[in-house]
Length: 539
Ligand code: VG1
Ligand code: CO
Image 1 (cartoon, rainbow, N blue to C red):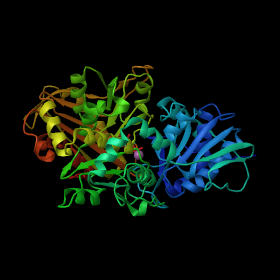
Image 2 (spheres, rainbow, N blue to C red; image 1 turned 90 degrees about the vertical axis):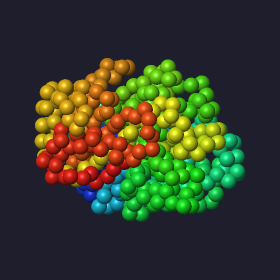
Image 3 (tube, protein in one colour; image 1 turned 60 degrees about the vertical axis):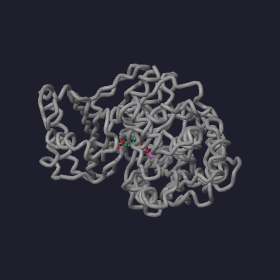
Image 4 (cartoon, rainbow, N blue to C red; image 1 turned 180 degrees about the vertical axis):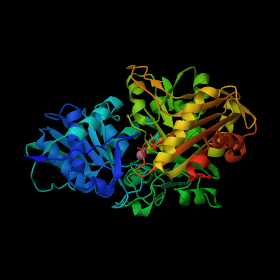
């Protein structure tokens, strides 16, 4: 074991989901090591502990895994369970942490951010419950990282992560496990694979775009292998270090190949895409896009059709910017609905306490208490299970849903690569104006309330403030604005827009939301501060 003198880094502050930087920032001397040691210190050391380790396979994943193994050995860890080749999807890692009752795990991913030497890399720590470290722990990591003077590492050759089985490194056991097996087994306990298999056998067609990211092997094994979907159902199914140049963010802009096929003349019955680390999903029917907020609501309303949820839901939770569509389902079901800040770490306590069964975010993330992460393939299988039972098209299911609950027209506008100082100025000015807004009229809408969302965790009482500006209107419409916490360059402004309709469900959301969109621009003076008139990405 060697102790290496390091220079502390003052920029290792985890964001919405772990620490994300340009890959070459992580590759500079001591940078990764510094943060890994900070994680170990923040959790009270790893002596005698068992950890899970894996990543989404992006550039530098292979090197980083070897470094982390040698550091864990040097710090006295008892064992590390690694996905074969150093690869694990985020939900599969969460599952392994739980199934094997480990002390937590390290996941290497920058999720939906592009990968490659000139793109992004990331690292996060999940706790023994399988969920992302809460803010108290990520803050401790940041503090540790900024004062660190040394880290420990064992000097050994790389270990072979290609072969399954157990080896050892400096007295620490290393178990290499199949990336897919335990996860696929978990899915079989939740969903009716026989019914889905029968649906595929009856001619049901599907396209799953893995976007050259981590879900390829999972989707191929489960959809084509176990459920009998036609060979070739999964496209871009081989994970690549640079995701084949794709931007593995499953939304209509970045998954345009899938969208074109689903809106075209020969569209399959169902389409889906997943992100870099496999925790997000986009769901598309033939000729119809399902907004993530609607997807969450439909899953909540139909969850009882899947065997894993037949007993019903304890409650549902959504991030604050996510539309209120799921709240209407909760009222109908007579269950609790929680509203949390953005990021999966805020769902952990509700899931652990048994208060929520289903959770979701507008950013294409849905999941349940089966793990403590959002789970892309889980959502796809839940949809397939519902389609197999209801024997209706996605379009019919959505139409019936809106007829019963009304439709929350919803859209998110992202302004990317904005100058950070300008974005901060804009948010600062907007925050200052909030107190004077209630009662004001804008674009024919009357503002009823305006605030900066603060959340008190109902389980442990911890408070998270400044989680996004909300402007609520008398007719139930809503604007939310916040800056992204996952980017690595400049600032990304996210503007979330929502309007509820009791009739007229076939409008284009951008048109239905036109006055809310104009109000957002006027209230925040987006063009004045950022120079932007149009968003870069609309979901
Ligand atoms: C984004 C999404 C958020 C999600 C987070 C991590 O965060 O908005 O809902 O939880 O990414 O997802 P932000 O701060 O950029 O808005 V993942 O799949 O990239 O780990
Ligand atoms: Co992700």
